[in-house]
Amino acid sequence: MTEGVKPVPSFSKFDYRVRPNKSTERKMLVDAFRRLSGFAPVEKYRYIGLGSTTFADFILFHKALNISEMISIEHRTEYEVRFEFNRPFECIDIKYGDSNKVIPELGWDKKTITWLDYDGALTDAALQDVAFLSAKCVSGSLMVITVNASGYQQRGRNYKKVEQKLKERFGRQLERDVPAWITGIDLQGDEMAKTYKRLIYDEVAASLRNRNGMAAPEDVMKFEPLINLVYRDGARMLTVGGIFYKHSETDAFNKCQFSALDFIGKELYEIQVPVITPRERHYLNQHLPKGALDKITDAIGLTKEEIYNYARSYRYSPSFAEVELS
Image (tube, rainbow, N blue to C red):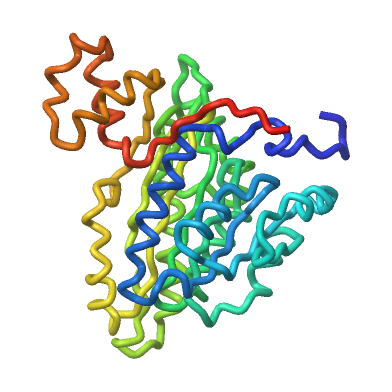
């Protein structure tokens, strides 16, 4: 890349509206967000995200959850005309600048759903956002972070030499010291998602230790990890997040019953929407949610793994069709 020339933004290369696993993830998040009613009606929440030019999450959350106070953070100020032109609703307030600068300027005295959907790898800047939100979010607020979790592919016979190179590379990416627990294996392939997950939650824990240092027992802020999703629509992506709540509001947290959703939990949940035909989709739907799916592989020709992956996400998986708009 020529020095001084910014890379082409991802929204100019990919249409994120027609990525099946990403679309499935958004709908899963809607189900999780609905359960915040244990703290307050979800339509009373504020939503903060990174809308880009499609504003896909804003459109869905406004329509599905009736959230009307919405803020989109856009750091590519040279595309301001496109962002303003594509803003789908008047209730979306676009703030320009890096998230590290914009987020601290927003008031943090109200319940907020924040989804920082970065398209790049985990960096110090992203961890700074995590630390700030952990220090400022009020009880009942939910934070979600998405990063590109593609692992390094470097290999070599001298493992120790390769490991040192990988850790040096990761240090440059992260722009901070690499924790002692990280090994070369933790930075390769699918292990990178687990490494990012731990780093993000460690950042939350460190920030809460500072926040709760002198707090009364009833005011101690807790964080419960809820969302740990991985998927591929090209690059491997990781989405992690959870809810902040005061010890005194434990009953409100329990009323949310997040655990009733099968994708909620502390372990990574892989979204793998299979590529199937409309006829196959219709046939499988007729046998869901309680049909004996393991007995229909011969009739439909899909593998058991494809059928299983569809069954666990069918309520959220999208159906795409080509429509000519004039």
